Length: 113
Image (cartoon, rainbow, N blue to C red):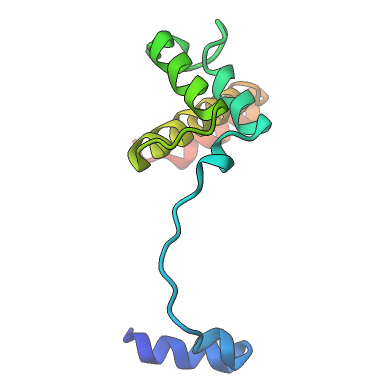
C-alpha cells in the first residue's frame, strides 16, 4: 500500500494531525534510561546463579558495563542494544520457566515442527 494512501486512511480514522504530522527521526535512548534502578536490577539478575543466561555471560565484562551505566557514561548504541536484549531475554526466559506445565505445553504447540 502506498504511503499516501495509508496516511489518508489514518487521517479518516483518527485526528487529521495524526495522519499528516511532521516527520520525526528516531531518537536513540539516552544513557540515563539505561541507568535506572529497575533496568540495572534486571541486568544484574543475569549474573545470578539461577539466571537462564548465567552460563552465557562473561561476568567481568558485564560488571564493567554495569559500572559504566551506573556512572552514566555514554556507550555505543550497539552496546545499549545488546544490554537491553540480554536483560529482556533473561527476564522472558525466567517468566517462561515459571509458567505452569499445561501452559508451557500450549506454547510449544504454537511453534511449527
